Image 1 (cartoon, rainbow, N blue to C red):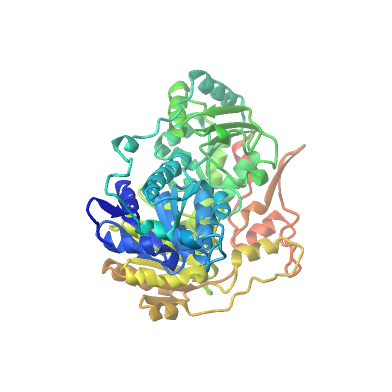
Image 2: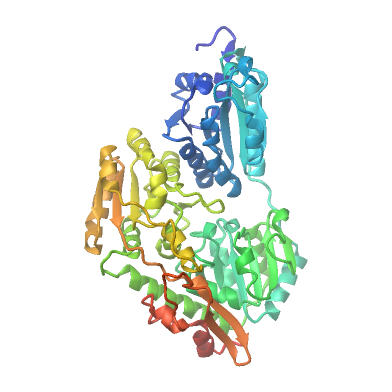
Length: 607
């Protein structure tokens, strides 16, 4: 496939466009309908690295994670037929989490299209829904142009751009000229909207009127975490985080209560449930219909995307603005608020909850629980480690127990919540940040879906630390079934020896069943990965449910505020229901946990 005169194969010209946009690796699995691009990848192997995953879903999930971690375009490909459809889960993950991804999809040669040829199907409607841009290439010379435009569209709309390539086009010779449009102007930061003085003053007036204001923080805050802490202190407003904002605000700050909803801190759920003014800043919260509707409150939303304003709740004030710019403007235009009993109570609630979390992390009882595992991860993790967290109970545990700072990279499948996303994200993290420590933390259910790609870690010598928490249960789903009037169904998993499976793939591993075995296991993981090899820790853990803080409910009574238990809690026919909130907390070893009404009474909070 060599260049002839002043021409070049169209597939080579297409790869040069990718290189022009700074793409240095892409994920995929070959097929006959993609061979023209595979030939080009062989010729351009010094410029762009092809990463052979063992399933196209892994490639698409890795590309999505690449985009989330770096902000740059992630690229994955699949051949016609099943290779194409296998991409969809990862592409929908990118769509829902607003990650710029380019999907290159193979198609049969034009001469046999529309003839029911082997693996041929109409790909356009399949990819139209997931894509912000979807085109089938019609001529060889247009191939690099279409790919160049697709990348622009993916960046513009922060979504998936799909290019479908009939295999014969890539072989055709086209003029050997520069087809890419990327230039220095593309590297400029996108101008962000800023609030007006009047908008900020309206916001401050609402805060002054409120008795219990709460800020709900989204990933839009980006590098503005420190400024937000200043505003929180100045206005005496506690902070509740969304999952994607984890690590953007110092987690040791007393006013940072943690996450809301199910993968949550007790303090965050309770304080949000008591708010009379909720201020969402740069937050896309998919559980708003559950959490925002528990009680009436005034609602302020700040977002740099005007289409988000009012999406999750009726607005009292909507402000089109960059999150950090708004926070800085509010800080500049506000006066120091008087000491707030509500803010004090919120901080005390958070401190009580954190003491409980430490108690769980220090628990050495058997069978092994998940919390001591996170204590070890926090002990050995590098300050700038990359954390890829799979879907399931590890989302709850990482939100509660994993220490993440702005120096770290933290990636999850947030809105689409695709099981099996942890290992692909770790592949992306190691390839995009080759000098950094990378973690894949997954449960046995999620890891089983994609564990074949341990081979990818081995093949490319990617020193990823894989932590697999195995309890023979789809525990996240089991917890949901706990609160439905049914018998547990379909959640038991057949046990398997993940450490032995890893060894069969050439990946060193260890199994732990006791808290006392954890330090040595994690020390070995660090030693092996520092030597440039992947490692797997299989932790056989309990299937005990973590304290479901979302089951606590607050309501106003003539006497003040009352905290009760959701009537559906433990309605499963296999379980017994506690008789009180106190019994509920104690059943999770929470004898030292206080209820929110106790904190409100202690600090004299008005209701």
